[in-house]
Length: 155
Image (tube, rainbow, N blue to C red):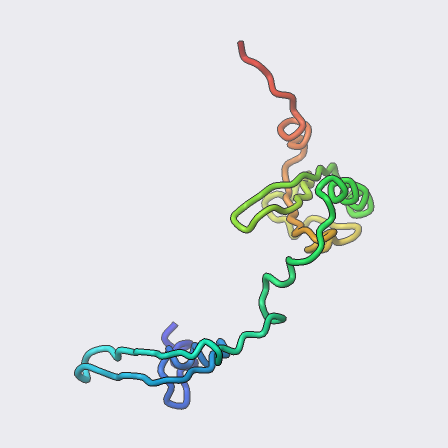
């Protein structure tokens, strides 16, 4: 870790200055280096927000924006698409996590411990009809036994 930080801090720049430069932040203003030699440096950064140079096309979330098909259309189309992608049993549904709603392709396989061994006939895209597509691998029998199982009353 120390070696990586040392490589990052080059040309006499501090770690903070190097990280800001790497992030593409243009800074204006002044730095205050205070305290005694054995104390850590203190930084007071006056950043002009107009000089912050961030390009929208470099932001990861831009990929997930745009038009989205309805959830019903997406589920129906992905069910048809999966027929060309795998011979395994599959199910499609929408779920949500910390980043919002997404469509899940749930596929049964014996390779739940190492999904890289799963063989696709045709690879699925990361974005399907505008929605983020998550591939979920489950054990054989899971779809019928858990996902599609009817709720049973234990009365």
